Image (cartoon, rainbow, N blue to C red; front, side, top):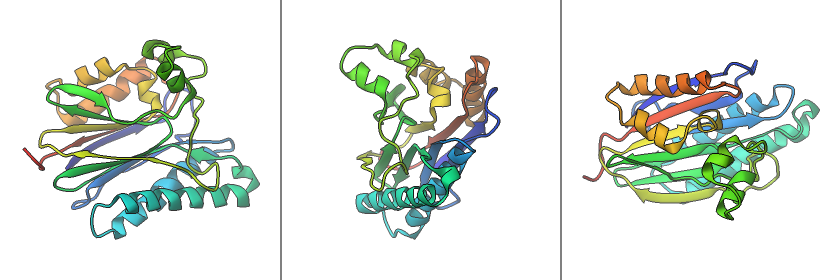
Length: 240
């Protein structure tokens, strides 16, 4: 797998509360997180979560749903205990979206409203389900996806890591196919770009790093009111 990453604090925020992990050679996992909380607690939460989560995956001998779930649990515990021990960090939390690959499969772990998309055979599909108020309204038919993207309560999430002693992540598995492209991103991107627009950029003839730059550029050009982080993961192996 090849990873092309880019993050930007945006045009409004003074601190980048997003965090991500770009795999080293031989590693087959990637993670993004979008922190929340005052007094710069959000950036603490996201960094702690990513560090603790990846620490467990680095120790794992093979792809495992149990390991993925345990890594999420330990990341949650670490952030939660820090928020309880430091009053300046009280209430902090973070989203977390991660993928982990072997030769045949891709495991996803997801909490919050950061997203995982897969581009396969020219079609971009959202593979994670937002844990957010507007997502629930879309599911119930009260909002369209376009309305949800600009809704004033679009930033209210219903599940986060580190805000309670226990958390239930979405863990899913799908097959891996040579040529698949994955996009992990925070809502600083998806609040400004539709699935169709994301697909258009990913399918363009630019180099992959240039595509990451183009995505961030578009988000900033349309307001850039939030931090934005993009990881593009290109599968150069797996089943044909």
